[in-house]
Amino acid sequence: MRRILHLILISCLCLSAAAQKNAPKWMDKAKRAVFTVTTYGKDGNKLATGTGFFISETGVAVSAYDLFKGAREATVTDSEGKTFPVKNIQGADDLYDAIKFQVVVPKKVAFLPVAASPVANGTNAYLLPYSTGKKATFKSGEVVEVSKLKEPYKYYKMAIALDESELNAPLLTPEGEVFGLAQADAGGRKDICYGLSAGYVGSLSISSTDYLSSVYRSIDIQKGWPKELDQATLALYLISGTQDVKTRLETVNDFIASFPDAPDGYLTRSDLYAYNRVELASSPSEQAVYLQKALEDIKNASRYSDKKGDFWYNQAKLIYGVVSVDSTLADPAWTIETAMEALDKAIGEDDQPACHQLRADILFNKGEFQQAFDEYMIVNNSDIASSSSYYLAAKAKEQVTGFNIGDVIDLLDKAIEKCGTNMNVEAAAYVLERIDWRLRLAQYTEAVADYDLYYRLLGGQVLPNFFFLREQAKFRAGDLEGALKDIQTAILGSSDTPDYYAEEASIYVRMQKYPDALKSIEKAIAIAPDFGACYRLRGVCYVRLEKKAEACEAFNKAKELGDPLAEKLIKEHCK
Image (cartoon, rainbow, N blue to C red; front, side, top):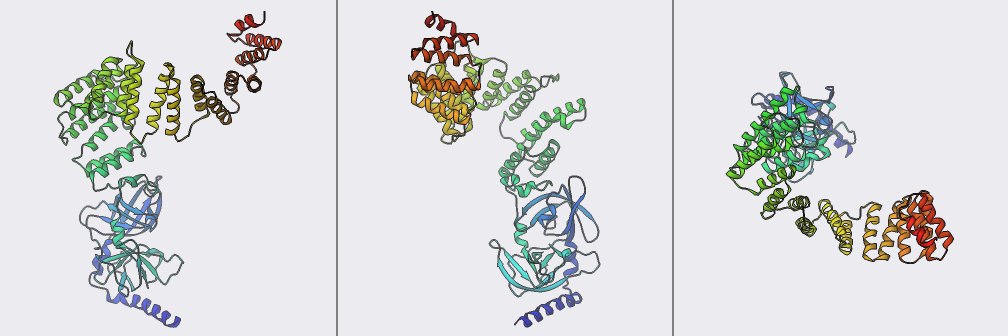
């Protein structure tokens, strides 16, 4: 049996050599679709070279993913020696070592049509490597095994010997359709090769969430966009923090070229021009040019918006955003006053709650808190009311002379309520602020409940100081056992903090456990020998234990260390 298989393989290889004399008619045209791809790193040095081929007349091509890892640029060179740049990555799969990309081509290119159906076992196939000769060089052999890849795609085993230079060359049907990318045997066998479904590689695409994956982030070449505008817009947002300013601008320009009717592209570029003008410009005068470009893009965006006031609103938003972080601007077109003027026009065109939100922010910035509060409440009575708008209303309210703390707490209640069932870190910040107001009103039980909520919102990921603060609220609420438990938890988390031992001693004093209190005081003093309040507390313990001499010694030490209450206690107990 082994002898028979060996003879079959030999005959296949012989067929491969003999077939050079009997090339199919389509072969010479097909060879023009095969190219070499060369990738370059950030330093401009060559990273790798390999084979790839076109699968569309517009320059869509496929090759091996590994060739592109770490690449900043890439080019392809066709069989005639013409070189073209790779524009972007269209899809990638590191597991199967496959990549799809777009090449910048001046006109239609020769390409290999992808087979619509899987190839059957026993089919005679052709391997077409890259060549520059007039006649195509090729190998042929049978498909000896067909296995599942991802439905409906297949993975093929071929009776074709594969040289390293032939990796990722196309595998073709007798009709000239490409069905696979040639891949080496993982075990190192040279007498066979494998074929990854060309249909599968051609189906690769990028979703909005893929942009942050390691598969794509390991390649610095521009990425293509999802076909759906909403997915592409989300992708534009997701990658905003992963690129330097100039690369980011290239990305936004490409988005605009791909979706010229989408306002988001122009608005994003407008922000880039305005906020990053220093990085983009080579001189102060050029910075002014970028500010003008920013306003022009606001106009561009408004052309594709069906909302009447968008032009004025977006202009007001951009101007205010820029001048609020840069007080050095002397351009009269970039002032808070011009932002307000544009906003008034926006409200006149289309009175939307978002305009009042922006107006409130500007008024808050100007210190006009009552007017800001009134604007925030317009927002809060609309369908865009949010936890943030209620919180900002609370912040404005607390700046108004004669404000009512209860009103502030009510607004914070609404801010927390607006976070919904999936409350997060944002809600935790509002809860923490509400605690502060509850403590000012001596609402200690309610403050403890809020501390408990804060703890749950953070999933228990809190610092020792949290337990110290909650302990004080419990102490004032009369929950001494709960207070003691919290301060001891704080001590476990930070055993070298003298204040925690002093607080533990205070609880023991309140519980009339004076020996325990003295032990806590000793620990505090051991860490901070000049802790005057601890000596005063030690004196109180000795008074309760009817040890006057020890008490007076402690009070005098407290006075020596500057404790403000020690003098009074000395007068009461030591004369």
